[in-house]
Length: 583
Image 1 (spheres, rainbow, N blue to C red):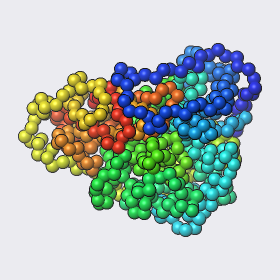
Image 2: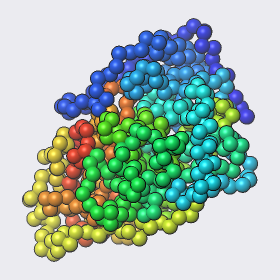
Image 3: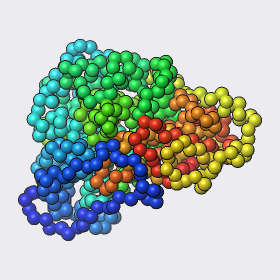
Image 4: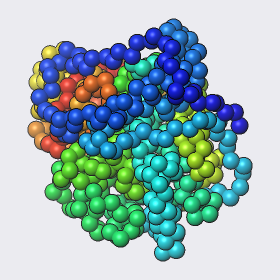
């Protein structure tokens, strides 16, 4: 395997490249009035301040693992894929402010060498089981493996402490892109979301297997997309178990409590039957009608030299992924620690079962036909991450090597896809209105985009959005998805934010998520980055099936309703909203 030698941390800095950080801006909006959920930042830890100087010098003076050639001031000299970060540049100052405890850090230990990943030799395929279906023998083995992981010294890169820190560092913008100190590395909000977490779980699983000397061991998945698996799996709820985490919402993780895949920070007063129906419909829209292409499901492209805030996550990343995090997190400890914040989520063992199910559903999505296949773009395939393996060796991995889980040596237990036939139904009122209320007449009742945006979304907002083309043929719709684009979404990074989006929902009360009018949601889980307190992103929602079911394909405009959820801890600014055709 090829290896790279780490620079000597005691050599002097030789480069004069500026590390000036960009000021935080609000991009033309009024300043946010809500405060970050973490409150004021703690005073800086002197030890962290002093150690940060050496780490930054490694990249600026010597190029870290990648050499001085990566530091060219010519942007065209950089390769497009996002490269594996130099671990020596992890920003301790930022991370300790995130946690709110100067004694806690999220940066990994350093290694003198990093090797290229090589696919394992074909052999026994590990089968990841549904957590609610495992037997006592498996449960005992899993608990033993995690117990041993938690018993490792905290500075061991294989320890549970360090495994939790991986998510904190990658998902809280602790790393700069190689040679680009003003551009951030993040595993969320772009096409890197699914492959990053797949690699993360792969090494987590390999470490567990090594600790119990069982290379066939496979970690479980929380099957929250099926009726039988929508409660917190019982193996995670025993206070005496290493799988337990006390920092959870006590009501939500109680026996029999059903997860809300559209959870917005407050509990809905609905029956279990209604909750089940909503959950299954949300899964259908997330996997089928709302994710007809890689860009809609996996997220927007994110290349070197491009800030992740210029991208947007896929529909699945917002919902159902985001609400499960918040539903488990402890609401009494803002912003919903541990699962409810990106920087602390890895501290809860159920995090890994949650993301194992997300990973499983990536596999499932590719079996649903149509244009549901991975990107073939070289910038995606060659994007890189760095992880420590089961032997505590630092390994550089590429996205292109993880697309087939079988080649990594694992698959998932077959379970019924109960949501597959749960296509939502429209409100009866809207269907009846279609015959007596013309689109032209409706246009006079609501404002258009130019009269509303940009806005601060602090109340329900309705606006008519013009469609670029109507009455498209089946062939045209198969080629180009009609997409609602909500752009310039600006949120406070440390806040939980959720708003729902409805189409042609003219009633005062918004439809429920199990109705066709529900197009999707935007979710921001609390995190932080060193370039300011706010971030910008965008949301894309598919319209083809939705407009067909609503009988609105010949309308010139669609009525878009934005509904901020009362459980959000901050308002959100939105610059614009439009509809485009995306091939």
